[in-house]
Image (cartoon, rainbow, N blue to C red; front, side, top):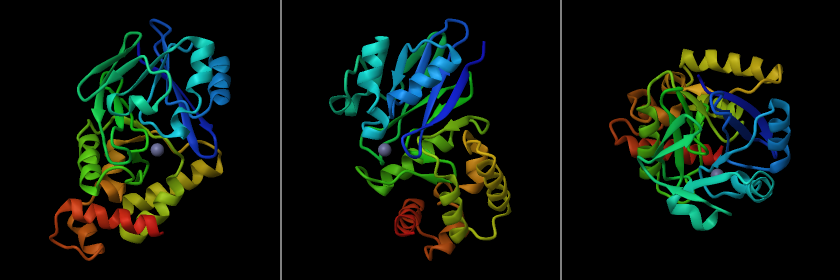
Length: 255
Ligand SMILES: [Zn+2]
């Protein structure tokens, strides 16, 4: 049976998401920004919390773990490289490991850059990926612990997933990301269409995620650092994509 998801806001602009396996009843929270909205989502769905899958150690992704674990005795899965910074970890995972949520199976993809040990969870059969703070809708995370080269390589790994993979990310930043993207890529008609759609979504109070790899490939300037038009737009025609990526990211930091 296909996986079910429940998406909701936490803290100021974080997303919480539950992933449910209808066959076994198992339910995972992807990250745990804060306990209360996750508890509310569990109540409204009637799903029991069996697992927390952590993408990285930042407090706005792990702040709810202790309270949830105390109440639900759920398993906490976390990236091997950051386990020491994450509370109450039961199982550590690294590149290529598989993680089961009931009968659902994820592959672990290491995506360093935002943090040094950041990981994403890819549920291939269900065409879902949870990208944490690596890939956002029309954006990407800040490069805090890694280098632009590392982050670019991580984004390429996600870009290589099947185009119809639905991408869940850690924050609702889409409108700000689109506004910035249009400064880099003003003639992109796919981006223009995306801007109109996202504005409607926000006006109707609905989330702008999940997005898809196919959609990001044509609209996200951070995934398009190897497209000649993007390199030219930042004055780096013919330069290596990682250098173009670094410049686009630097401009976003200043925007
Ligand atoms: Zn983060």
